[in-house]
Amino acid sequence: MTTSVPLIRTLIMGLLLTPFAPLAQLHAAGPTTATVEFSPPAQAKLARYGKDEGAVLQARIQTAVARACEKSSLPAGITFAITVEDIAPTHPTPEQLNASPALDPVKTHYLGGADLTGYLRDSHNQVLATVKHSYFPPSLKWRSPSFDPWADANVAIEQFADQMGAACRRVPATHINGSH
Image (cartoon, rainbow, N blue to C red):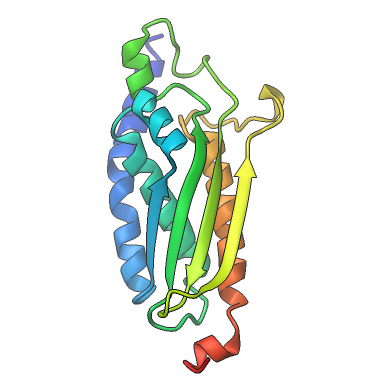
C-alpha cells in the first residue's frame, strides 16, 4: 500500500496541471474554438466522480481535438461543439477514493470509457460534419493498462479526436475559400 502513495500523488499532480494544456494549443490553432458540454446523465455521474473531474475531461478533449485538427487548413470562424453523452472511469477517482476507503487506486478497476458527439460548424453556424464515437471495452481483459482513473475514457477521447481531425481535413474547399 505504501508504494501506491507516490503513484497517487503523481496522478493528482497530472490531473491538476492538465487543464492548462489546451489553452496554448487552441491559441496555436488560430481562431478555432472548441466547447465541451456534458449531457445531463453524464453530469449526474460526474457529481459522484468529483467536482473537478469535469474540468479534467474537458481539458483532455479540447487538447486532443486541437492536436488532431492543428494541421488542417480551417478557415476563421470554425467551431467545435462537443457533448459528452456518457463517461465512466477505469479506476476510482480521488473523490471516490475519499468516499470509500475500501477502494484501491490500482487494484479496483471498472469498465470505463466515453461516448462523445461532436459538431464541426462554420462561421454561419452551419454543421459541416458530425462525429459520434463511443468506446467502452467489452471486458476487463481489454481495458487500458494505465492507472489513470480516466484511462479508457482517454482511449475514447483520442479515437474521437482522430475522427474529428479527419472531419477537419474533409471540410469542402468552398468553406476554405469563404464562398458558399
